[in-house]
Image: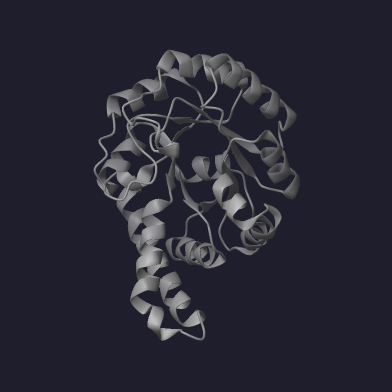
Length: 270
């Protein structure tokens, strides 16, 4: 198999599950789950994670190498990049998929900036953008905000993006599965635009409702916080096993994370 664009995973599988990577061990766990499930995944590197590591290239290059060597089709994606230069850098490095997030801009500015960047990278990457506010970012966005279908149709037509992240009730960094998605809104958006819809903040949504969201029209599901919590809980439980060798507890965290992702995928797949 190979490094592929997100569009290929969506076409082959009906939807794409996208998982955020902070540490290399997480990526190893995700690829292990991918192999066990016999499905492709999107490995995501967020702007926040790039800043945490200090630059894009080290972890980004590692993910690309892992994707190319995987026995499954894997997309490598830049997630929630608000800086156009970072989007360009990801494309230059070889990422197959990027997200430019201009949702903090006024509509016209978001359209103009997104369109220019998408045209600059045309054909090189699968290009995702965001319209509307997904809750939880910087603690200021309300999960009650919803993306308007007419605005979404205009945005996609004007920008030519390949995928659209929409606000339908989810919120980032949720620690409990208490989010109520607006399935009617998802259906209206799916009917209004011709590109795949992306759900961010999926950790706060029950697995049953994620499955309903896919059936309603969501084609890319982003999961981060839920998986980080599983990884962290495993480390906490087994930390004393490796006071002089972190591999002792990281190998268990890797195993626990892979098992959780396998069960998650089986629960949400249509």
